[in-house]
Image 1 (cartoon, one colour):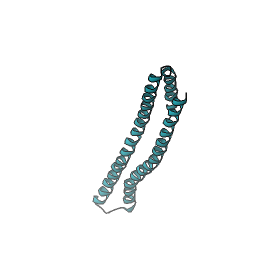
Image 2 (tube, rainbow, N blue to C red):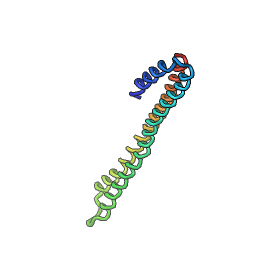
Image 3 (cartoon, rainbow, N blue to C red):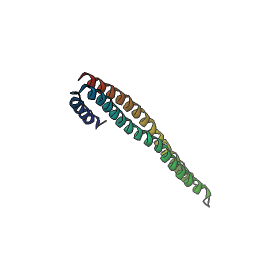
Image 4 (cartoon, rainbow, N blue to C red):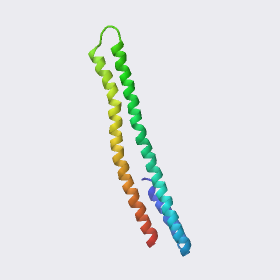
Length: 130
């Protein structure tokens, strides 16, 4: 998103250089569009990978909190309700936080994907018409 304007300007510069030879220009246009499309997809792929890892981190926090709850239940001398509630909170907060981040991340990933497709189409039009 932040690097795209520089990448687009470089692609346009390469296109203007290649347009002097019509056959080379047509092949170069296809190559430029393919390269730009691959670069944007690679970034979106990284975002998808991160969105896949975040719930696992939330699950890890959930397991840690459940271990705290089980330690409280196994402790001799009775169960203190306050410490039990703290353990349950420690179990649920990481998972809720992870899912909240993933839901927001899916929205932004979708918005970035739509923008990337639109920008590649606009670049294709710019390369076609000069």
